[in-house]
Length: 177
Image (cartoon, rainbow, N blue to C red; front, side, top):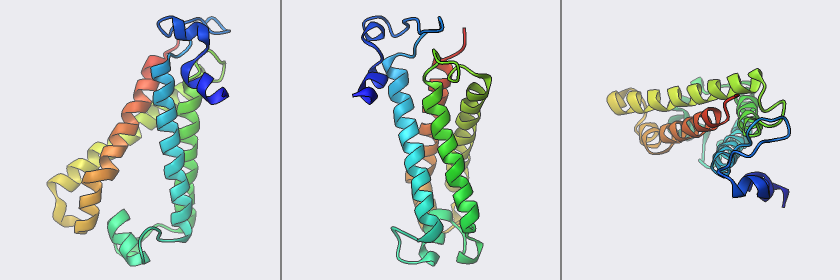
C-alpha cells in the first residue's frame, strides 16, 4: 500500500495540481512525476539485475559467442570482464536510486545537489548512449554484427533514449525552488 501511496502522492497532493507543499515547504512531485520515476527506476534496476546474470551467464542466448555478437556487438574475446559487468550493475543501481530519490523533492535527500546533479548526469548519459547508438547503428551498420545492429535499433538505443527522457523529466519537474 505504501508503494501506491508514494506513486499517487498523499490524498492532499492528489486533489491539487500535484504541487502540494511537502514537509519542508518544497512542492511535492505529482503523480506523473512519481510514475515516471517508478518506471525509470524499475527499468534501471531490472537492467542492472540482468547485468548480474550476464556476469556469469550468456542468458537468454545459448553461448558466450552468440551473446557477444547480439548483445555487445563484439567478438567473444572482447567481452567485458565479470567485474566490469558488475560495475555496470552498480552504476545502474545507483541510477535507479537517484531517480526514485529525486522524485521526493520534499525530503532533504531528494532535493540535495548530489541527487539533482546525479539525475541530470544519468539523463545525459542515457540520452547520449541512446542517440549515439541510433546514429552509429543506423548510419554505419556494417561495422557491427547484424544481430547487434538489429537489437540496438529496435531495443537498446530506444530504451536508453526513453529512460534518459524519463529521468530528465523527473529532474526537470522536481527543481529546487
